[in-house]
Figure 1 (spheres, rainbow, N blue to C red):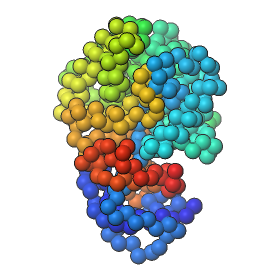
Figure 2: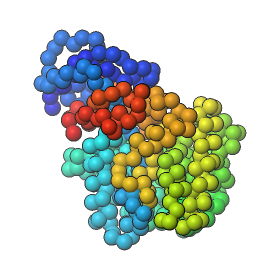
Figure 3: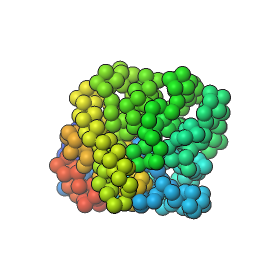
Figure 4: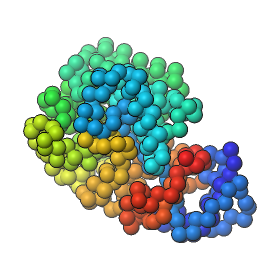
Length: 396
């Protein structure tokens, strides 16, 4: 693999949330080698970056790659089977990469298909976003979206499900290992959002066993009771988490847990009159109102908030949808600088990959976006003014 030298490009420093003007950036092979005011040596490709902006690739921590964002997306896996589901996954990760999403965490797919997608991307069979797969989501018999689930009701069943995930990850060479559990119903599901589907003893058992095997856990949690139980158990990322009391935001901060709020999808579902049933619209409206309040309080308390979208969910539209989420985070009180960091460095830290991705710094993989305008002034820079995408030093 060759080298690329960006000359006089403005580097978006997401760590310090500032612009480093008119810098030279040398990429050698897969990694960023040097960032300096002037680099004398040449490279295989030299790019005039004057007036352009260089950012890290975007990371989306909550994606369903086998869904297409249509009104019936959650039903597609059962309607058309696993082969078409895999083809949708391939198409969606390819489109996501082309539009600047260089890494996704896939948080629920039928029959562990996301693990196969991750394997195929890693080996170069698919030119798509890097996939951190959870496989199918572990859930109880009355869980949320059972078509993407692995059913486990008792401790014995949970133990088997967790260890089978570990064995699959090892077999497929998945280094960054996550599992997903469904602990409450969903706003757009037929089931009651209700209490926690697992009791505290079971949740602590899941956390202990997963962490013992060096895996982290993401949890779908929408009801207040379910969210509280998951926070008490110490689950690594709370997905959605619309209704969190102040005292449990404090617990999240103390334990180093992360909120992945997925704001945009609930706003869209709350406007789904005529497409979704009335009770789904009403529940989604309640959730989106709760989210705005919780998001502001979590930010004020310094709880770590990372970008995740629920890409693929009903009515969301085609992948990727991160830029809708970025605008919602900004609307709900985050500065544009904070939003960009949440979608890059913070997300990388959540994954435990901050030494590899998430910022434009020497030694990191060259997952890079070239933009025509400053994203700290206008987040539309990522959509309307995207010039080029690089993943591991290769032009996409």
